[in-house]
Length: 81
Image (cartoon, rainbow, N blue to C red; front, side, top):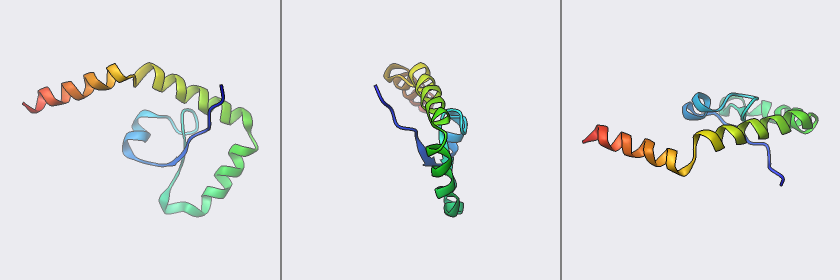
């Protein structure tokens, strides 16, 4: 099975939950001129791509299943009541 390496702009949730260049590759919307270099870096380092994909996939598989996310939502809703 093949997976693609995520390259996305930052958000507070992503930065808190997925480690940069270990579980997800990021760029800054304030520094769009750096995006081509980031893409070049990823394309020329397939082992880095593979590591990001594998680490990120494991993190999501182990921490963000449907049941876990439902529990998080239910806990939040219970706190609101």
